[in-house]
Each structure stands twice: as structure tokens, then as C-alpha cells.
Length: 565
Image (spheres, rainbow, N blue to C red):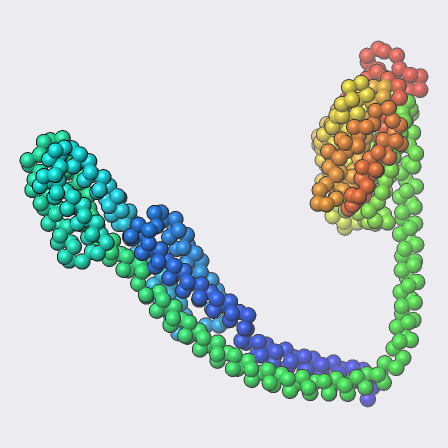
């Protein structure tokens, strides 16, 4: 038999074997004991909360529970336990009988909740009168003065006792005694002064409320504390246990079949293994050859990656130079090829500083970064007098078209700064905040950038607004990408607050020393993205613009920005 036919036969047998094994395993798991345990626990929890609720209702009835908050909390827990019973029992499996039992349990719990609401409403009125009846009796006897020991005083005290006894016992004899006491006291109303009569009316009002509400409260008490929920729960538990016992018996039978089938498979696999050893006698040699080929391919790939890295490093200035400035820069890609971009470009009349970040990292981000660098230098070569906003409009048009041709979902943040001969710096573009450390005041300014990210749309006209800033002698300009501020340590970011702490010691230091301070502050932080820093210290003071009429250094020719550009 050929190797191909053996492969086909063995593959078919294995598929059949695994299919039968899966079916037997699923059948053997039809009785899920973990789910069964949770279902039994859910039923037990409902039974416990039902009993607790009955106890709390009795306590509330006889004044042992001053507030209804525990009663309400238990009622809510019982509703949640009811939902848990539905979920747990349903997870194991139901029958029409179990569904009926669940519906009857829901009905009983709904009746219980309705009875509880009526009970709380009626009992609140009854408790109020029971609380104030003795006080009303005491106030009335105080009004009687010397007559408190007379017939009316004795009848009032008898009425209070009869009401309290009737509340506790609630049978026909105590009710009759209570009503008789009310009648006796009411009969003496006409002989009392008007001011005493008002107190008597209050006493009688509370007594009548007790007589009227006590039967209603006890009636709702009996309905709220009945055994119907417990009975329905017992029926549900018996039906469920019977259903699970049937499932457990069936699952046990399938386990026996699964064990026998597993023994058969062991023998079949052993025989198949012998045959496979014959078929794969030369497999190790072939694997070794393919592994060697893969290794050579990987070496070639890594060689290309290193070449791309070297090309990227060659495109950014290692030691950028600006007239009248001390400059230091660093770039750390998150992968072999990064997506960060910075550049310093010198034209005849201006010096340009650019910094940006392509979304993501790796080869695609590095390619977009190289496209941006080429587009910037091409645009400045054609028109050295461009304003930063116009430069970004032109670069965006080229970059957007190239990204679409690549089929990549990329965009780029960028800020372009034009350093004029007069010393003013015009900038535009949305990127990270620009930090300026003022030498005279020791203040650290954070200038927020604004505008459109490159690569989002073809036409960016009007999306950028140029602004101007000025550096005085000793001032420090710091540009960075988000890989610096988003570095993480112990769940916290380095953030702009970390930059401010690192720059707080910048006074009197060179640009390289400040750059090293930031790197030391980042020790222990994990860089999850490309991280670029550009530090520029102004060495000599220059006027903001040639329009001021002041003298500029001969190294830079005065050029006023043309708003029409």
C-alpha cells in the first residue's frame, strides 16, 4: 500500500475514533456534578432565606425588629436566590414537571412578597398606635389630676392594658375585653371638660386603630409566614433530584462504554504507531534539512531588517546642528525598525526642526517615516520659504496617497518648527507638548500643539494654524514622542509630570546633560513604543523677528514669514 493511501486510511480512522470518543465523553458528562452541587446549594439558599424571612416577620410583628430594613434586605436576597434556582436547575436540565414546579414556586414567592408589603403597611399603623396609646393614657390621667384615681382613671388604665393584651394574644376574649374597655371610656366623654376631652379623643382614636388593625395585621402575618413556599420548594427539589439521578445513571453507563472504547483505541494507536515508524523512517533527516533551510531564510530576513534599521538611522541626523544652539538627540525604536521621526533641515534662509510619530511600529511604520522624511525635504528644496502649516499640507497630500497604495491603516502625528534668521520660531502641527525651560524665571512651559494627523484625509487645507515662540539666551526647547511619556513602571506612566521633574534640574546644563537626565529618570520604566528626544539650548539671545529693527547675528539672514505662503 502506498504512503498516500496509508495517510488517508489512518487519517480517516483517527477522525472516526475521535468522533466516537467525543460523543461518548459528552454522554458521560450529561450528569454534571459541579452544576448539580450549585443547584442544590441554590435550592437550600432559598429555603434558608424563606425561614429567615418568616422569623423576621414575626419579630417585626411583636416589636423585636424596630425597622424593616433587615426584612427588605432578606426579601431582595430571596428574589436573587429565586433567579439563581432557575439558572442552576436549568443548567443541569429540566422537564415539564420541573418547569411547572418552578412556576408554582415563583407564584408562591410572588404571593409572599405581596403579603409582606400589606403586612408592613398595616403593621406600621398598628405599631404607631401601640407606641402612642400608653403615652396618650398617661397624658389623660395627668389632665385628670386628683380624679386620676377615680372611675375614669381606672377605666383609662384598663383600656391601655386591654389593648396591649389584645395585641399580644389576639383571640376573641381579649378582643371583646378591648372593645368593652373602649366603650366604657367613650361613655364618660360627655362629663369631661373640653381640654381633657381632646386628650380622651386621641386615646380612643389609638385604641380604635388597634382594634381595627390587629386582625388585619395578623391575617397578613399568617399569609406572609405560611409554609407554601417551603412546600413548593420541597416538590421542586424532589423532582429535580429524580431527574438528576436518571442523568447520573445514564452517564455512568456511558462511562463504562468510554473506558472500553479507550482500551480499544490504545491497542489501535499502538499498531498504528508501528506502521508509522516504517513510513517515517527518513523523517528526521527531512526535518533537519527543512530546519536548516528555515534557518538560512531567517538569517536572510534578519539581515534585511538590520539593513532597514541602518537605512533609517542614516536618514535622521545623529548630531544635529543649529546656529547659536547646543543640540542633543536620541531615538530608541521599540523594534528593529521604528516609526518615530525627527529631522533638522537647513535651507538658505531658515532652519527646520521636525518631530513626529507614525502609529504602530515595525517595518510598515518605518517605511511611512522614511516617506515623510523624503516628502519634507523635497517640499523644502522646491520652496525654502514655506510656512510650517503649508509644508504640512503638502506633506499630508503625498503621505496619504502613499499609505493608501501600501494598503496600511496608518497615520502620523508631526510638529514642524521653522527657525527664522531673526530668531523667531514658527511652528504648526499636532504632536506632543513642546516643553520650554526659561533660564530667567526657571519656569517650565508646556505648549500644546494642535492640528490634523497626517494620513487621515487627502485635503488638509486650513487644518493647521502657525504660531510663533521665542527662545532667549539659556532657554531650553525639548521635543519628544509619546514613547517617552507613556513609558510604564508599576502600572504608572512616566507622563508629562516625569518630564517636568527631569527638566527641573536643567538650569546651567548642556543639551547632552539634560538628555542624559531624562534617560536616567526613565531607568526602570518599560518602553512600549519608539522613544525620541530632541533637546535644544539657545546659547545667544536673538530678536523675535526682523521686523523689530534690532540687530541679528550675521550667521542668520533676517527673513520675515510671509503669511501668504
